[in-house]
Image (cartoon, rainbow, N blue to C red; front, side, top):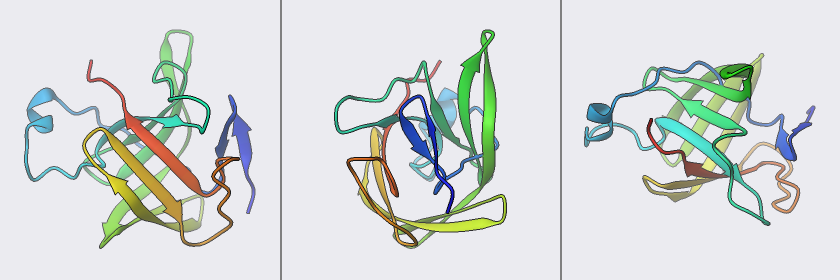
Length: 135
């Protein structure tokens, strides 16, 4: 499986797509899946930076990997996501991946691949996501 490094973050096993920015009223919805929102990726060295890279998971099952460019957010890749029990299943560019939910809260999600190599130090098959503030 191809893996690409972007700003020091590994991308390849999980390629998110399509964003629907949610309102503050959606945040208050107790039935809203905690995965919905904008997330930064943390590494073992430091917390993620919402200003440099974002994974965006929307309420309709789309997800997107975005970077800032010319004052706007540019999509690098996209796909779909769904919850399957204690897994998040993503599909992008014909690739399907199951990620076990290791940690789940409104502020933080830790996902670990069930379909490929996992190397936490390199960020392969492992996502430590921290929620970005609502704007």
